[in-house]
Length: 116
Image 1 (cartoon, helix red, strand yellow):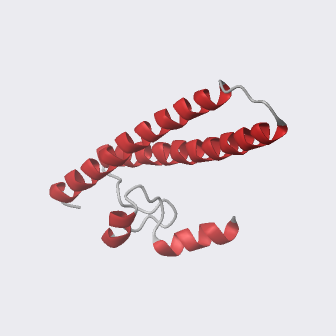
Image 2 (image 1 turned 90 degrees about the horizontal axis):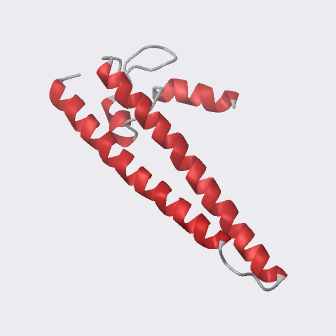
């Protein structure tokens, strides 16, 4: 992969990383606000509980994506970016443009998903 392409992906990953960090901070703030509410009845408790669950799930998903981004940035530094972790073939540039932190090529991704 050319240096200009790598720079493009570093910029893309850094931008997504920054956005996720902002999202996580927002989720944490929202959870603090929800926990500080004075709840008067069971309906309020249920509503806040559902909101908490949703916010926690979003936060967990964002944390996982953040880890994947960090791994991808490390692979760029180690000159291993764009290589499938399963078959060790190059991941198509089209796939990397859609998901720059992809670990697998399309074929291997399907195998992994079927195993899960």
